Image (cartoon, rainbow, N blue to C red; front, top):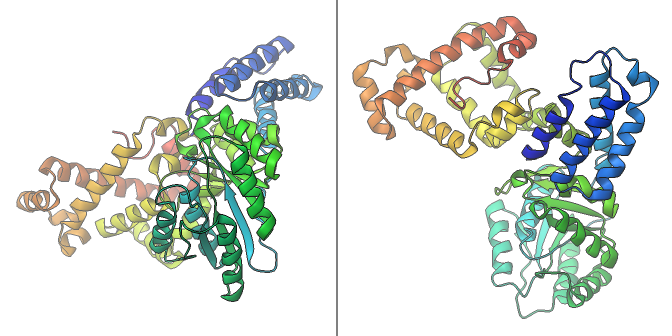
Length: 451
């Protein structure tokens, strides 16, 4: 996510980093490099120019020029302006209405509307604690209705029973009546798309909107199409006055032009971002946190939120005691690995830790996932006694574990060696606290990852 832009911005700041004094020429050269980085990231030309003009104007102030840390002051200004450009604050869903709240998803074909409908329903059910009804109203795309019903089944949520013989407007009306009479809090309408914006599509969407009066019309746009996504957003906004955007495939967007330009060009806030193919890979969009990621300052708040959902406080306290007493076992290690896997992609998680983003770029996410699965297979091939005390694992046991896990003896040896090293590190960390942890990681990364 934003890999190319992150690198180019870091290069742009290189000339002023560590300087105790900067001149107007230094700022001018830095802003030229920043503008070029934004343009190469496919940010709208006017948005990039206005952004750099605002930063330069503030950077040329007395407070920066006479500061003892002008480089940090300038980066802080860039951070603030990036945050403002993307919307300043999180734009929340409008669910504080008499139920059912109606969310209408619109967008072109291929933008990921149907999958996003499922992701959003899951989020509304688990995070907002509301009962959603998924409504398939795309009667044109082959199997679109079946796809949404399958997603609903996977999520153990409900989907309205529509068919391709029905009119989309009738589907929307009937679904609203059904939801009102069966205690649903939220309706999510998955509407039809086209390969491009056309009058017929807009007329149908307008008819649906007039029929059910949605509380939120959200445009689902493919972030990887860059400026085209911005143009699409403008077209939908002009026709329907959309309330917000969901940017999909942001995990595969190395440039970031759509995310950075969208709010400035259309005036529409980004409400959610899609960060992967899995049905839990959707995040609420926070402009300040995204600005922090772009500048490689990490995103600790999102990381903490993800961890809080997975960590059992009592189990965590027990684990901490074990670490202090050097009683951490392979069973404990396996449970921690599973927690990490539930939290998401390891490279994405690493990028949320300040200073780790650049290191995690060297880690192939697919390879990291395979390594985690290999480790899991090895540990599961051990007996309970071996997991609790790795010291008893001799040569013959290692051969048996390798056969059982479909790996090699060398793989088993490597894991056991890394586990012993990790136990030593954990003992040190438990004594040193968080400050010691950050000092130990400074530039070295996590043991075993990417090696």
